[in-house]
Length: 231
Image 1 (tube, rainbow, N blue to C red):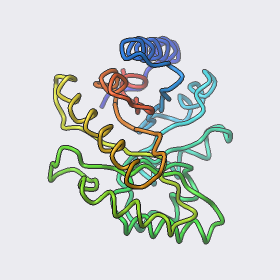
Image 2: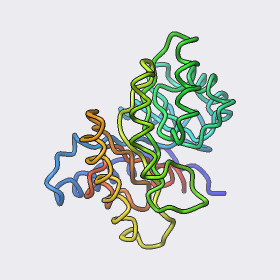
Image 3: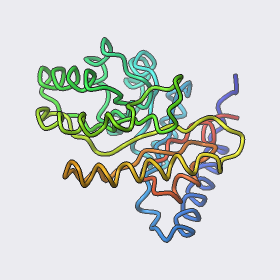
Protein backbone atom coordinates (compact mmCIF):
# COMPACT_ATOMS: atom_id res chain seq x y z
CA UNK A 1 0.00 0.00 0.00
CA UNK A 2 1.29 3.47 -0.86
CA UNK A 3 2.07 5.77 2.04
CA UNK A 4 0.57 9.26 2.47
CA UNK A 5 2.54 12.18 1.09
CA UNK A 6 4.26 14.73 3.32
CA UNK A 7 2.75 18.15 3.93
CA UNK A 8 5.18 19.75 1.49
CA UNK A 9 4.44 17.16 -1.18
CA UNK A 10 0.72 17.67 -0.73
CA UNK A 11 0.92 21.44 -1.14
CA UNK A 12 2.99 21.07 -4.33
CA UNK A 13 0.62 18.46 -5.73
CA UNK A 14 -2.42 20.59 -4.97
CA UNK A 15 -0.91 23.51 -6.85
CA UNK A 16 -0.11 21.20 -9.77
CA UNK A 17 -3.60 19.70 -9.90
CA UNK A 18 -5.21 23.14 -9.85
CA UNK A 19 -2.99 24.23 -12.75
CA UNK A 20 -3.87 21.13 -14.75
CA UNK A 21 -7.58 21.78 -14.17
CA UNK A 22 -7.12 25.39 -15.30
CA UNK A 23 -5.21 24.29 -18.40
CA UNK A 24 -7.91 21.74 -19.30
CA UNK A 25 -10.56 24.42 -18.87
CA UNK A 26 -8.58 26.68 -21.17
CA UNK A 27 -8.51 24.01 -23.86
CA UNK A 28 -12.28 23.58 -23.57
CA UNK A 29 -13.11 27.28 -23.41
CA UNK A 30 -14.32 26.99 -19.84
CA UNK A 31 -13.63 28.91 -16.64
CA UNK A 32 -11.70 27.08 -13.88
CA UNK A 33 -14.40 28.30 -11.52
CA UNK A 34 -16.80 25.87 -13.18
CA UNK A 35 -14.88 22.84 -11.86
CA UNK A 36 -14.79 21.80 -8.21
CA UNK A 37 -11.89 19.74 -6.90
CA UNK A 38 -13.12 17.05 -4.52
CA UNK A 39 -10.16 15.46 -2.68
CA UNK A 40 -10.81 11.77 -1.98
CA UNK A 41 -9.51 10.84 1.45
CA UNK A 42 -9.84 7.06 1.40
CA UNK A 43 -7.08 5.69 3.69
CA UNK A 44 -5.82 9.25 4.27
CA UNK A 45 -5.18 10.06 7.96
CA UNK A 46 -7.12 12.89 9.61
CA UNK A 47 -3.88 14.84 10.11
CA UNK A 48 -3.43 15.16 6.34
CA UNK A 49 -7.11 16.04 5.87
CA UNK A 50 -6.54 18.88 8.33
CA UNK A 51 -3.57 20.07 6.27
CA UNK A 52 -5.72 20.00 3.13
CA UNK A 53 -8.45 21.99 4.87
CA UNK A 54 -5.81 24.52 5.87
CA UNK A 55 -5.00 24.95 2.18
CA UNK A 56 -8.54 26.12 1.52
CA UNK A 57 -10.19 22.84 0.55
CA UNK A 58 -13.64 22.70 2.11
CA UNK A 59 -15.18 19.45 0.83
CA UNK A 60 -13.84 15.88 0.88
CA UNK A 61 -14.95 12.54 -0.50
CA UNK A 62 -15.08 9.19 1.28
CA UNK A 63 -15.83 5.77 -0.16
CA UNK A 64 -16.87 3.86 2.96
CA UNK A 65 -19.28 4.79 5.72
CA UNK A 66 -17.27 2.91 8.36
CA UNK A 67 -14.07 4.83 7.61
CA UNK A 68 -15.99 8.11 7.57
CA UNK A 69 -17.48 7.35 11.00
CA UNK A 70 -13.99 7.12 12.48
CA UNK A 71 -12.38 9.94 10.53
CA UNK A 72 -14.89 12.79 10.35
CA UNK A 73 -14.97 13.54 14.11
CA UNK A 74 -11.18 14.11 13.94
CA UNK A 75 -11.40 16.61 11.07
CA UNK A 76 -12.44 20.29 10.93
CA UNK A 77 -16.13 20.75 11.61
CA UNK A 78 -16.71 23.32 8.87
CA UNK A 79 -15.91 21.08 5.90
CA UNK A 80 -18.50 19.15 3.89
CA UNK A 81 -18.30 15.43 3.23
CA UNK A 82 -19.37 13.64 0.06
CA UNK A 83 -20.10 9.93 -0.20
CA UNK A 84 -18.57 8.71 -3.47
CA UNK A 85 -18.56 4.92 -3.00
CA UNK A 86 -21.33 2.38 -3.34
CA UNK A 87 -23.94 2.97 -0.63
CA UNK A 88 -25.86 0.01 0.78
CA UNK A 89 -29.40 0.59 1.99
CA UNK A 90 -28.52 -0.53 5.51
CA UNK A 91 -25.89 2.24 5.73
CA UNK A 92 -28.17 5.07 4.60
CA UNK A 93 -29.19 6.31 8.05
CA UNK A 94 -25.55 6.70 9.04
CA UNK A 95 -24.72 8.28 5.69
CA UNK A 96 -27.44 10.90 6.09
CA UNK A 97 -25.86 11.99 9.37
CA UNK A 98 -22.32 12.06 7.98
CA UNK A 99 -22.60 13.40 4.44
CA UNK A 100 -24.18 16.36 2.70
CA UNK A 101 -23.86 14.90 -0.82
CA UNK A 102 -24.00 11.35 -2.20
CA UNK A 103 -22.49 10.80 -5.67
CA UNK A 104 -23.43 7.15 -6.06
CA UNK A 105 -27.21 6.76 -6.07
CA UNK A 106 -27.81 3.76 -8.30
CA UNK A 107 -31.42 2.73 -7.74
CA UNK A 108 -34.89 4.04 -7.04
CA UNK A 109 -34.98 1.85 -3.93
CA UNK A 110 -31.94 3.67 -2.53
CA UNK A 111 -33.57 7.06 -3.19
CA UNK A 112 -36.68 5.97 -1.30
CA UNK A 113 -34.61 4.85 1.69
CA UNK A 114 -32.69 8.14 1.62
CA UNK A 115 -35.92 10.15 1.52
CA UNK A 116 -37.23 8.30 4.57
CA UNK A 117 -33.96 8.70 6.47
CA UNK A 118 -33.76 12.41 5.66
CA UNK A 119 -37.33 12.87 6.83
CA UNK A 120 -36.63 11.18 10.15
CA UNK A 121 -33.49 13.26 10.75
CA UNK A 122 -34.93 16.54 9.47
CA UNK A 123 -32.23 16.88 6.82
CA UNK A 124 -32.04 17.27 3.06
CA UNK A 125 -29.52 15.61 0.75
CA UNK A 126 -28.03 16.49 -2.62
CA UNK A 127 -27.38 13.45 -4.78
CA UNK A 128 -25.93 12.41 -8.12
CA UNK A 129 -27.45 9.56 -10.07
CA UNK A 130 -24.72 7.11 -10.98
CA UNK A 131 -25.07 6.02 -14.60
CA UNK A 132 -23.34 2.87 -15.87
CA UNK A 133 -22.44 4.44 -19.21
CA UNK A 134 -20.11 1.61 -20.24
CA UNK A 135 -22.68 -1.12 -19.53
CA UNK A 136 -20.10 -3.18 -17.64
CA UNK A 137 -21.73 -5.88 -15.55
CA UNK A 138 -19.16 -5.43 -12.80
CA UNK A 139 -20.07 -1.77 -12.23
CA UNK A 140 -22.82 -0.23 -10.15
CA UNK A 141 -25.10 2.37 -11.65
CA UNK A 142 -28.39 2.86 -13.43
CA UNK A 143 -28.80 1.78 -17.00
CA UNK A 144 -29.23 4.73 -19.31
CA UNK A 145 -32.86 3.89 -20.05
CA UNK A 146 -33.71 3.64 -16.34
CA UNK A 147 -32.78 7.23 -15.51
CA UNK A 148 -35.91 9.04 -16.84
CA UNK A 149 -38.27 7.01 -14.63
CA UNK A 150 -36.04 7.49 -11.59
CA UNK A 151 -35.96 11.24 -12.13
CA UNK A 152 -39.73 11.35 -12.53
CA UNK A 153 -40.14 9.48 -9.24
CA UNK A 154 -37.96 12.06 -7.50
CA UNK A 155 -40.84 14.54 -7.64
CA UNK A 156 -42.24 12.60 -4.68
CA UNK A 157 -39.02 13.01 -2.69
CA UNK A 158 -38.87 16.59 -1.37
CA UNK A 159 -35.84 15.95 0.83
CA UNK A 160 -33.63 14.54 -1.94
CA UNK A 161 -32.33 16.93 -4.61
CA UNK A 162 -30.81 15.43 -7.75
CA UNK A 163 -27.92 17.76 -8.58
CA UNK A 164 -26.65 15.84 -11.61
CA UNK A 165 -25.05 12.63 -12.84
CA UNK A 166 -21.92 10.61 -12.06
CA UNK A 167 -20.06 7.87 -13.89
CA UNK A 168 -16.88 5.79 -13.66
CA UNK A 169 -15.44 4.73 -17.03
CA UNK A 170 -13.71 1.37 -17.63
CA UNK A 171 -10.22 1.09 -16.18
CA UNK A 172 -7.52 1.76 -18.78
CA UNK A 173 -3.91 2.83 -18.93
CA UNK A 174 -4.80 5.41 -21.57
CA UNK A 175 -6.88 8.34 -20.23
CA UNK A 176 -8.19 9.05 -23.73
CA UNK A 177 -10.25 5.86 -23.64
CA UNK A 178 -12.44 7.53 -21.01
CA UNK A 179 -13.38 10.43 -23.29
CA UNK A 180 -16.35 8.81 -25.09
CA UNK A 181 -17.81 7.73 -21.74
CA UNK A 182 -17.54 11.23 -20.29
CA UNK A 183 -18.98 12.71 -23.46
CA UNK A 184 -21.84 10.24 -23.36
CA UNK A 185 -22.69 11.15 -19.76
CA UNK A 186 -22.89 14.80 -20.77
CA UNK A 187 -25.20 13.87 -23.65
CA UNK A 188 -27.39 11.80 -21.32
CA UNK A 189 -27.58 14.73 -18.92
CA UNK A 190 -28.59 17.10 -21.71
CA UNK A 191 -31.31 14.68 -22.82
CA UNK A 192 -32.61 14.20 -19.28
CA UNK A 193 -32.83 17.96 -18.81
CA UNK A 194 -35.33 18.13 -21.65
CA UNK A 195 -37.30 15.14 -20.40
CA UNK A 196 -37.42 16.06 -16.70
CA UNK A 197 -37.25 19.84 -16.66
CA UNK A 198 -34.55 19.58 -13.97
CA UNK A 199 -31.39 21.64 -14.30
CA UNK A 200 -29.03 18.72 -13.54
CA UNK A 201 -26.18 21.22 -13.56
CA UNK A 202 -23.51 18.94 -12.09
CA UNK A 203 -21.43 16.20 -13.70
CA UNK A 204 -19.24 14.23 -11.29
CA UNK A 205 -16.66 12.56 -13.52
CA UNK A 206 -12.91 12.24 -13.66
CA UNK A 207 -10.38 10.83 -11.20
CA UNK A 208 -6.62 11.05 -10.73
CA UNK A 209 -5.69 9.39 -14.03
CA UNK A 210 -8.29 10.97 -16.34
CA UNK A 211 -9.61 14.19 -14.78
CA UNK A 212 -8.22 16.46 -17.51
CA UNK A 213 -10.19 14.55 -20.15
CA UNK A 214 -13.28 14.79 -17.94
CA UNK A 215 -12.88 18.56 -17.58
CA UNK A 216 -12.57 18.92 -21.34
CA UNK A 217 -15.84 16.99 -21.69
CA UNK A 218 -17.80 19.06 -19.18
CA UNK A 219 -17.12 17.73 -15.68
CA UNK A 220 -18.06 20.06 -12.84
CA UNK A 221 -16.63 17.86 -10.04
CA UNK A 222 -13.38 15.87 -10.30
CA UNK A 223 -12.68 13.28 -7.61
CA UNK A 224 -8.94 13.25 -6.93
CA UNK A 225 -7.36 10.84 -4.45
CA UNK A 226 -4.00 9.25 -5.23
CA UNK A 227 -2.68 12.18 -7.30
CA UNK A 228 -2.99 14.34 -4.20
CA UNK A 229 -2.46 12.06 -1.23
CA UNK A 230 -0.46 8.94 -2.11
CA UNK A 231 3.31 8.72 -2.47
